[in-house]
Length: 64
Image 1 (tube, helix red, strand yellow):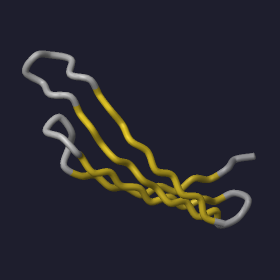
Image 2 (image 1 turned 120 degrees about the vertical axis):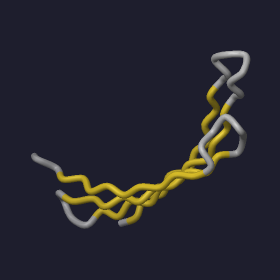
Image 3 (image 1 turned 45 degrees about the horizontal axis):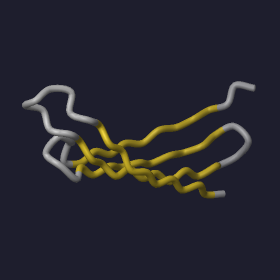
Image 4 (image 1 turned 90 degrees about the vertical axis):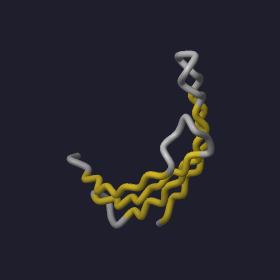
C-alpha cells in the first residue's frame, strides 16, 4: 500500500534581481488502513532561486 510521487517545479523570476527557481520534489505515502496515511516528502533545489533542500512528514486521518 505505497504511493510514490515525483515532480519538477519551475518558478519564474518575478523581479530582475530574483532568479528563476527549479526544484525536484518526491514523496512516499503508506496507506496504513482506511483512515490513516503516513507521508514523507523531500525536495532539492536545482538553481539559485530555490531553497537548497527541504523535507517533511505528515499524517492524514479520514473523518468519514
